[in-house]
Image (tube, rainbow, N blue to C red; front, side, top):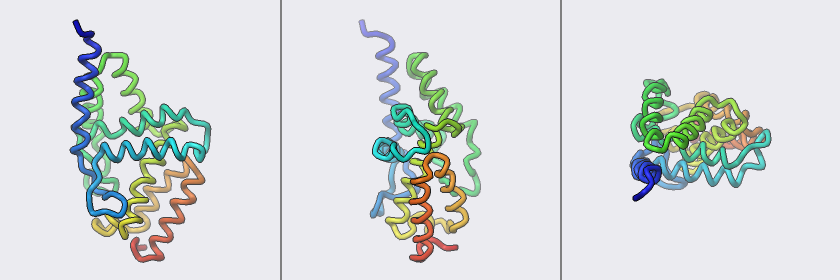
Length: 196
C-alpha cells in the first residue's frame, strides 16, 4: 500500500508540469523565443544562488530558492500578468489566492501550508528573503530586454519612467544589483532601445 502523502505529492508534481506551458511576454536572452514560467523560475533560482552574496541583508538562500521556484505556480490557473499591463495591473490577487489554495492544496496539509506561507511571504515582499527574491524576478527580464534590443519595451511601448518605476524595487533586496540594473536602464536609453 502506497502512502497517501506520496500520491498527493505526485498529483502536485504532475499538476505543476503545466507551468511549462505558461508563456511569458519576455523572450530568452538574444532570442525571439518566448520564455515559459518554468524556465523563468529555474533561471531565478540559479541567479539567487549565484548572486546571494549581493543581498542587502543576510538571507536564507534555501527559502529564496523555494520562493522563486514557486512564486509563479499560481499562474497555472490565474495566467501570467505582464508587469507593464495597464488593464489588469496585477489586480488579480483573488484569482492568485484561489490558485494557490487549489494547487498547493494538492499536497499533504503540512507541505501545503508551508508553500502557501512562502508564496504569501514573496507576495508581501517584506522579509529580506522576499526582497531579494523580488530583485531576481525584476533583474531577469531586464537582462532579457537589454539583450533583445528593447524586447517587450519596444513591442508594448513601455518607456523609461515605467521601467524605472517597476525596477527600482530591486534596491530593497540588493543595492549592488540595483546599481548594475540602473546602469543597464540608462545605457538602454543612450542606445535608443528604451525611450525616455
